[in-house]
Amino acid sequence: MESTSGATAARRRDGVVAYVEAHGFARTADLAREFGTSEVTIRTDFEALAASSRVVRVHGGAMAVDQAPVERSFEEVEAVGSDAKRAIGVAAAAMVRDGQCVVLDVGTTTTQVALALLERTDLIGVTVVTNGLTIALELERAVPRLTVIVTGGTLRPLQHSLVNPLATTVLDGITADIAFLGCTGIDVDHGVTNVNLPETDLKRLMVKTARRSIIVADGGKMGEAHLGVIGPLDRFDGLVTAGASTESVAALRAAGLAVVEADAPLSS
Image (cartoon, rainbow, N blue to C red; front, side):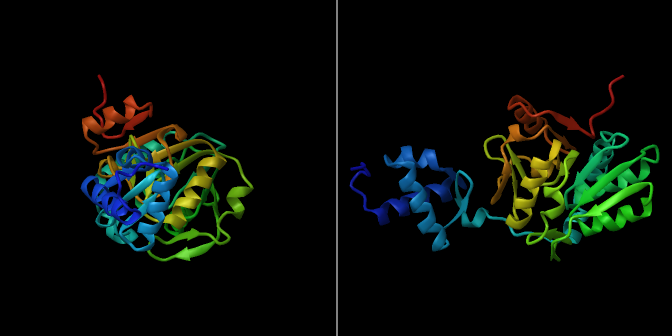
């Protein structure tokens, strides 16, 4: 029988909530050690606590309810950090080569990648696949120079994105050269995360279908961990960022992630 210091399940769960609230996020393994019980028991506690809205269940652990962010609309986010996003867009678009298939995830930063691709009049034979209606409309100006494919699926009006059901049919049938993905959090311990679960599922598929997967995220996303886990850092081939602190960039590089700082001064 597991030792729980004589605590009942209810008392242990109160302790779990207190720990999560104090730290903002807690991993299953850490709590198993803290309470002298198994990870299976802690997962059961998480499920019970999530059902009563006392914690938010996330991959690998749980986070405090007041830490769970509220998703903002595309238009609300668009103007935030616009200079950084433009710099990211230009740097990311510079990675694209003639004849490639490019997956562009929904988002304000990936929209800047699309706008930078519009300016790449040197590109020939590039196909862009996207689940973002805003991105598709922006790229319409480049047709037929660019081929634009929309994934289809169910409309999410907040982000003008297409998700399941029916959003995966196109992605299941292609192999892309490079995917540019947005996120709402990137952290050394918790990986790349997103606040919205339906979009998170599609982002994971985009990673699978592409030979290279690049995260595009401004400095405001650094150190954040949100509900939907897209993947650990080692699942991605790089990050293009701007406006990030030196400490954040150094930590990500130390963890093995290749980081391009789009706003870094050019070396002489």
